[in-house]
Image (tube, rainbow over all chains, first blue to last red; front, side):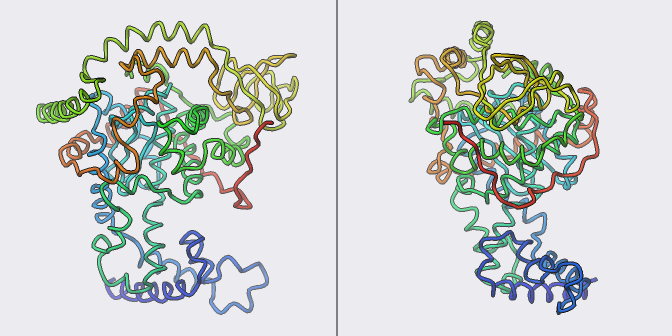
Length: 300
Length: 206
């Protein structure tokens, strides 16, 4: 097993070096880039006779790269803890255990429907009139009291939390980190633990600075696509998130409560248009709970 | 354990309150609750009076007799057509046009900007949450700082982080919570990315 790991890491390093020769690595997603590098996507049926790498070898290479670049879960949680503690320094938890437990219950139930049900997920509402929600690697999710007060049903809360859960489940922050690291230093990164690297520090920045930076627009659209499905899997009406986006879209762009949200995310109208494109009639007849009653009983 | 939590929260609140009294607002986080409830009723009355919510069609869309794909089509909307939104059900709005009433997919509609009645209601709500005198909700933001600069300067809060971790809900607790709400888990695939991978253009009227 250990020997296998060494071999996998070696293969991964080779791939990483290959990858660094490609100057477009900045633009594309990491895995998309890996696939292109080994030619998985270029191949069309019947035209692969010239390919130097067989399908099986390609798959092994991809898996090796994934292994080699994976950030161990405990390091991911350590990064998330650091960031979350800093955010709480700017906006403390709302002093309401009942509210916190309610949000935690909705969040945990939705997170259980994701591809990372085994993670220890944490959810909290923070004192801020801003309208925003935050996800840190490792399963730390915070939503502002300002956003919570805008909501009108449990399914809307589920949708908002699901968007943040999606960022963690799809490891969007880590992907950026990996990309930066790959492009900058090639195979050298494999030599030392991830959490120690200067790149982690660079991503985290000072305090909670990371939360003022944008993810890739496509990561936001993906999180929206994943979110509506997670909410639906959890038994909710999947249109909770779109409803909240419509509400936020009505706020003026110069409204300071949405300033950070609007500078770090595509405009809600853009996000709704992407969702409309992919949802179409797929959720017709699906239904689901909205649970306004339980939400109202919690008070705001 | 519970006691520790309460003490920690009390500490957090009192330090906040100190910061707040400088700004002269919301000094007592506990004191806002009754006021909020009291004014909620009047806010709801105002909401009912001004419940005329408007929207505009973003694209050609069918109006149907029921909120289902197979329901009888009773009309259609063209981009820019204005509607009144009467009700919401799942992914559908019941809308009223000059000619008819029927159901349209919610993502085919852009909800209108808040009109005067809504703004008045927002004023009531901000009054309700202890922000009287500041007008709109936005006027108070920035006090609890989540601007780029404030995030950068934020100092690690170990106590609140431990509090957050102590509040963690287990999967089993969440399952019971779901059952209480009659939430039943369903098997669904993720939605595929748009085929061309391109951002869809947003259509703006005018």
